[in-house]
Amino acid sequence: IQGAGGGGLFALTQTVVGDLVPPRERARYAAWFSGTWAVASVAGPLLGGTFAEHLHWSLIFWINIPLGFLAMAIINKPLKKLPIAAKRHRIDGLGALLLIIATALLLLALNWGGSAYPWTSLEVIGVLCGSAIFWSAFALRLMRAAEPLISLEVLGNPIVLAGTLSMFLLQAASVGMAVYLPVYLQAVLGLSAAESGIAMLGLLLGTVGGAAFSGRMIPHFTHYKRIAMVGVVFSMLCLCLLAVVAGYATLLEVEVLTICIGFGTGTTFPVTTVSVQNAVDRVHLGVATGVLTFLRSLGSALGVAMLGAVALGYGLPLAGEGVRIAGHSATVEPFVMIFAVAAATLLLGLITLTLMPEKELRGYADNAAPMLAE
Image (tube, rainbow, N blue to C red; front, side, top):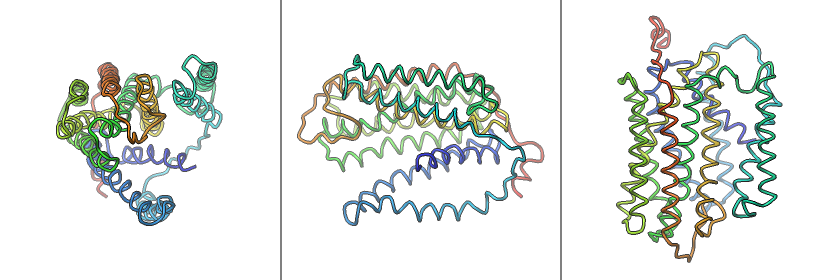
């Protein structure tokens, strides 16, 4: 239930900004989104750790209730000023159900493969086949439903297709790195769990800095897509360098490289979001943003599973994400491969980003700015 509400909020926040601000100006708001996300990402785990260590672990759940009411109080009055479309719509419940089952089976197969069961086992193959069947049923539903969950007009847009696919790949590499980098810091550099958590701030702050820089630069570039392309190349080169020096790099060197990796990948988020929203009509803004958000989340999950399979294949004693390697002296080879696979995933993301057509960003109409100011 929490996931259903949270997933809606991810798409709705971007859609509301898309309703109020045209694409040419929208990228400037990326700095605000990135800054808020950075504060929450740092403060949340620290506050949760304090609750669990000094008070009671259940407070990490209860704290969301007053925070939720506070957010509602802040946003309720401004949202009432937004115009409401009179057209009624039907939610494609069957399409949503097929999508959920297909995705769940795919994630289950990726988590089982190589850990609970061999990749060639009947269990893993059966779950993959089941996922393929439900994906096919979902595609059939999209073609036949009167109001499908995802508009075929939106999916058929080459900018939306390439932009969402590139975000899927880039997020897979980014989140996969964020999960397995602390394991590397503990197993190879000898940091404690708490120290590795603090060391992860470099990757986080680099990502925020890259997103803020990209958001501010987009309005000044005609070929704004190049900002993200240069960022991905920079991040990919730093990942390759990290793979080369992983066995003897100092903590300072790793921190510098992870900041650079985060900065490079961070530049892609405003570019892909603005490009996808700029490519569709206003009536399809929510659908396009929802597709982008879904594939970004799916990429995060698949990235963790993919790099986890690499780790298990090279003998790293992990059954999943975030596992402490207490007392284990790990070799550097699994982490070299993890960094190399993450770099290869970024390369695929760069290719799809290169194939994405570039459409001139829409700006304010003659009377839109005064209306927004009012």
